[in-house]
Amino acid sequence: MVMKTEPAPASAPAASAAAPDDLEKLAREADLLDTSAPAAPGAAVQPEVVLSTEEELFGTLQAVREMTFPMLAVAVGARRMDELAEVWRDQVLEKAASAGARVLELHGMSVGSMMGRYAPYVMLVAALAPPVLATKKILTPPKAPEKKPGEGAPNGSASQ
Image (cartoon, rainbow, N blue to C red; front, top):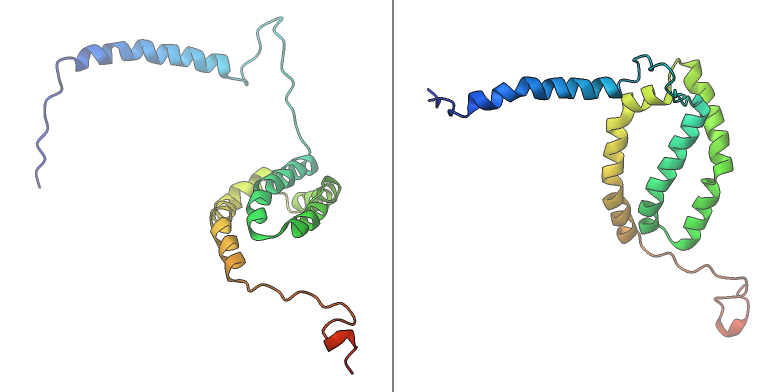
């Protein structure tokens, strides 16, 4: 197959002539944004915020909670959401983050390296979870109400 190419329009050279100026402007803007460049004398230096592995993991767990609870609300009732909220409260997440941080550090990993490695799988689960949870809720037969002692026998008498 042979592809025929058209000559460039006459306005192309004029547009390309402006490109070096645009590139220079872009390079100057990049220099302004470069945080590794030394600050100008007398300029205020922004302190870099460095989180510990435990703090970073705690923040990640909080984000997971905020992202998953709306999906879970579709699949479970209000009573179960209250139970989940108790399990996912900040105090529990702090303990989990503390233990998880020790494991990550033991293996020479950070939250960033872990997410970099497993992010595609996490996103796959996040994408598939809503329809899967909704389908499970639809297909799960309703549970029979729990019987209290003395119920179920005719005329209120206990069966033997």
